[in-house]
Amino acid sequence: MTAVAATMLCAGCATAPAGPSVMVLPGTGRPFDQFQADVSVCRDWAAKQVKGAFMDAPSWEVQRRYDNAYVQCMYAKGHQVPGRDLPARTPAPPAGSPPPPPPQTPPK
Image (cartoon, rainbow, N blue to C red; front, side, top):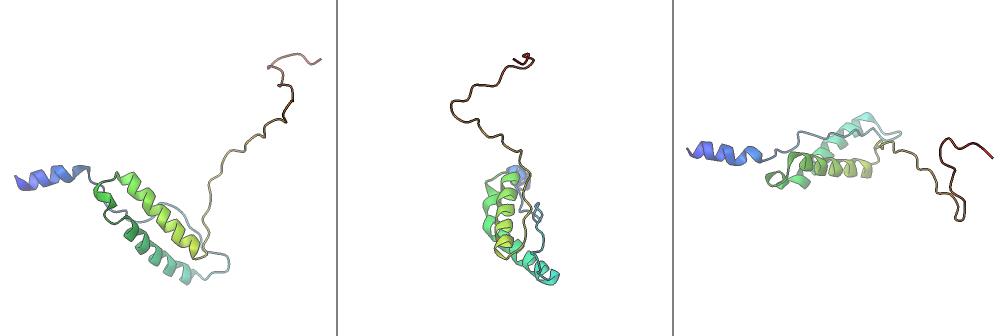
């Protein structure tokens, strides 16, 4: 009965991440052997940063924390972290400009 209770109690527990879910590229002019060594060091460091967090946090949150720590470590070692493409923002019109005409308004 105790084993069943322990299993049910831990059913909601997250597990430690198996590794990063983000891409990091070798830094410009950095040897690949150094990149691989840094990957190993940064994986260990990221795991230490989330140690114990998976006992009381959802798995997606633990993975997010792990990924953030891993990216920070790799970036600090000079490697490239590709960014996300964000939609371009349209600049606001200058103050005092009249608003644009409504759609399908004939030109004057």
